[in-house]
Length: 315
Image (cartoon, rainbow, N blue to C red; front, side):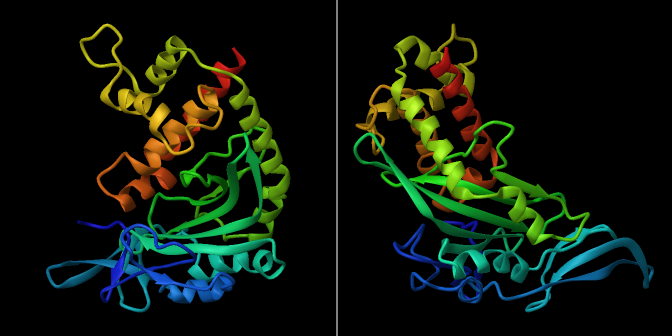
């Protein structure tokens, strides 16, 4: 089985706290590991260097005007970038968590390298959580993805995780709430500015709880559920509105997903069926599924699922 997780010298470039994730790969670390130790244990204590890029024509090296982003530990070329690219070093990404961890506001959870070192991520657990419907626990995490890849942006965002099924939920609380920051590489990374924009996680999780309780108080019908799934996944070609295979799979998950007993028959259940599908069912393998659910098409699908669930709950 192929892995999105990078394997270097036979070792997965990943560190984790708690249960063994994905394929049993990576290094298990103590719960109170510092941010910088997490970086080192995950095999991410390397830098990228910008080197002039050339093409060889008739034995002559001609500058391309581009630069190669090269990993210093093995001279691996990660991407080609323009002259105005500002790389963010892995150490800068992990230093972002340092003050939070030292103050006891967060604990490092996982970190690793995807797609041959072109995507670096770190996930920290925020010391905040809530419980709904007599047992449905939701915890808060902060995810920092640092791409060493042309065309990709730095992405820092709060992401709630539903404990009963380990679903990564979306924190979509309206346009006025800054729950994530996306940064291109045209400017140098400003850690203080990002922290100021994100603000306090606790207030965001309180807003998310109110939203979840609202979804849990509103019930769907067979008709509105099919309408919801049709908006998200479309209909089979050549049919009179039959759900696609994906839509049918998600509909089946309404009753079989972990945590289905909490707020059963509500839009909270419907929304979580979509997130469970994205995180645990869709895709070819666990790590390709994770990459899509965090950074790819399924991350966008979960945002859409939440926004549409709220629309139906308010109708």
